[in-house]
Image 1 (cartoon, rainbow, N blue to C red):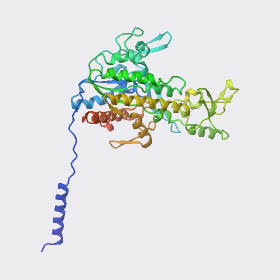
Image 2 (image 1 turned 135 degrees about the horizontal axis):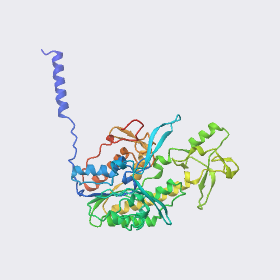
Image 3 (image 1 turned 45 degrees about the vertical axis):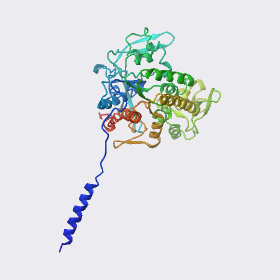
Image 4 (image 1 turned 90 degrees about the vertical axis):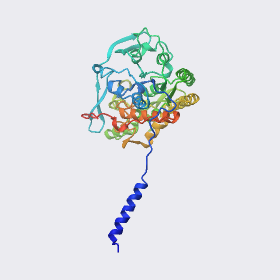
Length: 443
């Protein structure tokens, strides 16, 4: 007679066999280029494309640009060499950038400006102003990212004299350049492209608090986007484009808040009732009014100015009276937010329409980054968010990305490419890229 122990052994053995028979298999598609050709991939865009980070363009940022990450993954499905206009080791600090040195007692970060190492000269262009010139780059080129460029400027022939980052890539010296950006990026044959132009057509207005730039006319944007995509696809090239993010999704506009500043003021002066800003009116004029949570203070606002006597107003404290409102350049007020979002939505409608008409892949950065702001993101077991510094995605300037953030964006482009072209480019390992670099930590 079999013992209870014997039956137990039989049951355990049967159970283990059953588990083995029902083992779940995960089918990972073999890497494939699908219907696309990645043998010469080029990237078109602005500072985000160039790898700009921490308020500057420097070697480590360039090396971790999202196009370089995409290209590395494309090489697993037959993609070709991807060459960037890197600063050399002696110029590694590039245009200079911010680094985190610690935190104040109240938890606010302390940063230090790293001095530039790639400036060769400065030139004054009549009617424009001073232009910083960087060390020239010569050689092959796949990453055409130019910090500061707007879609509005891609056909402007003198632009190669007005932007030192673009001038650096051109063979001529400012002020002799006449090659347009669109002609420059399409001069050599290519088989695939990514395009993330258009951000600065809204962003530069927003970061100036609506005071230092203008939004590109919607019709002009549409005309130029159609022109650029038509030229980029003129020989049957395939590609991927990205929409323009909502400016309110980045920490540059969400870190220094009206509520936090007012609370600090009231701690020192309980009688203070409100902050005042110089805000946009419906007729386009500006006037002082009480600030609300819907008004966005920019990250670089010097909060030490609050409460300081304003001589021109008889010594009244800055920011806390209607006669001494916070300057427009420090605030993207509620009206300016609405105006910017209206233009961005129009730009994105154009981008999606034109890209769809050409059969291009679309990375909807607007929706993606708004979702990250609302819900956060978990990638490769790493918790990410749009929070300043701690979120891991945005660099110290609050607009551009960390290497980890660029890896996230690269993967979103890859997902869109895979879907549109029936490809299976492997995703990058986001956890292998760093977020904000903390003092004494190289990871």
